[in-house]
Length: 129
Image 1: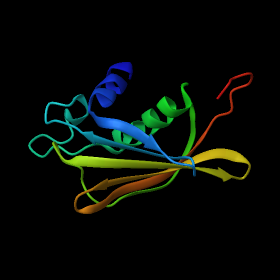
Image 2: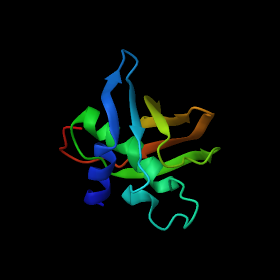
Image 3: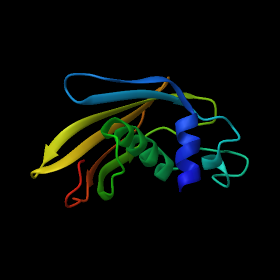
C-alpha cells in the first residue's frame, strides 16, 4: 500500500490548495504505466474505485500531516471512468456527521463529475489528528 501511496503522490500536478471552509483541492494525472491501472482492465485501463478513494485520503492526510484510518465510505457514486493521462481535480471538504469528522470528496475530469463519496475516520486515542 505504501508503494501505491507514493505513486499517487508522485502523480500530483502542482501544489494542493486549501480555503477557509476546510476545503482541499489537488490535481493529478495518472500516466498509463501508473501502478493503479495494472489489471484493471486489460486493454481498457480505468482507475479503480479504491485508488480514487485512496487519492482523496492521501491529500487529506497530507493536509492534516498524519495518517488516518478509514471507518466508513458512504454515498460512493462513480459516474465516469477515469482513464490514463486525464487531468483529475480532487476536491475534499471537511464535514461533521453525527459528531464525527467526515470528508466529502469529488473527483472531476474535463467531461464532468467522475466520482463522489464521503468517508469518516476511526478515532485514535491520544492522537494529534
